[in-house]
Image (tube, rainbow, N blue to C red):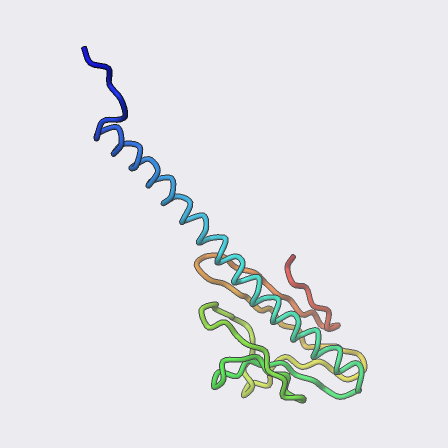
Length: 140
């Protein structure tokens, strides 16, 4: 009987199919990590804009608003016109548009009427809450 060297075609195909299945499972895990990162990034942009609006209101004593401008697909600090980019692939619910008046922070106190903003994509969600005193909870 001759000594056999290497692998048969069937053995090689079985090994490749197992490697393919493992890679496919890794792809699904990677997509969830990507979505979570995208949602976290968008929530951080919103939180930063809210904090800036509240800080400006407390510093100069005038009302400052943050709103979503659908025409430019960005968040706008209403009084200063500063724009923050909005990732269009992420769904944002609860953020008032500029026509609706946005989220307002009172001068000196930073108080607000409050808001609950939901940032989501593909079943993954993160909430940002602004309470009556104007405090911002990013859900972390």
